[in-house]
Image (tube, rainbow, N blue to C red):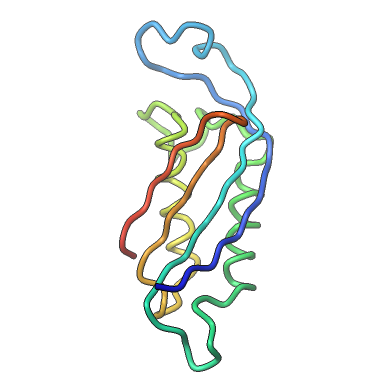
Length: 125
């Protein structure tokens, strides 16, 4: 299995909407780090798994969408708790919509909300 990984980081804000969220229920910022790991068993005719320019463009669009945003105010988090787990799933969907190489069969998205906590979402694309 081949894999190609791209990374970015940005600051965004959110607040949790669960019962009794404690201090996380107040608006606050995280310095998020986002990792997209594309996987697949075959390479294309140029011996690439994924066009790295397309992967980086997708990541750049994700960064532009969420940098300095209040996640709770965005339609993709409407009626959802904007947890780091939900954020990983939202980014997965955006990345798979943007990168459509036939050789990519899986994508793993990891979102770090600080140096010690991260969540991932991965699935077949």
